[in-house]
Length: 117
Image (cartoon, rainbow, N blue to C red; front, side, top):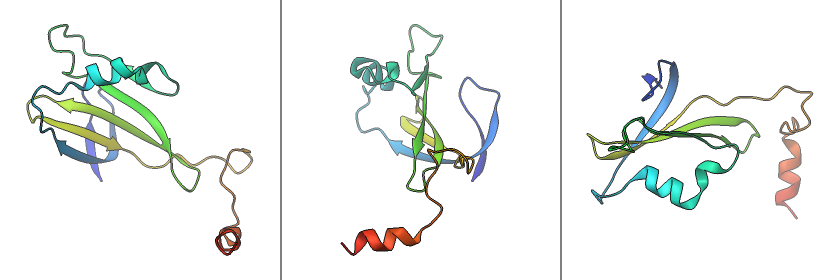
């Protein structure tokens, strides 16, 4: 975990960051996300760049992802222009309250029974 500041944000949080090299120098994250319409689907959020000539610079795509436990993990994705990489950053899981009906079951013993069928 590292304290990281996101592009276009003054928010600092404990996160895990993964960097993937982009083999195609012409790849554009903003073009890809917008052309497929992913940014318009809830719960996705798109914070576009304010630079019209550089649409990928400081543009951030974010959304929560549900993990096996039922918790939501905030994830952010952006293109690092200088490093020619795709950056994936995630924070700690956001655990639901026990009275929330969408919470993951507390009893893990049921998982063993499901695998034996």
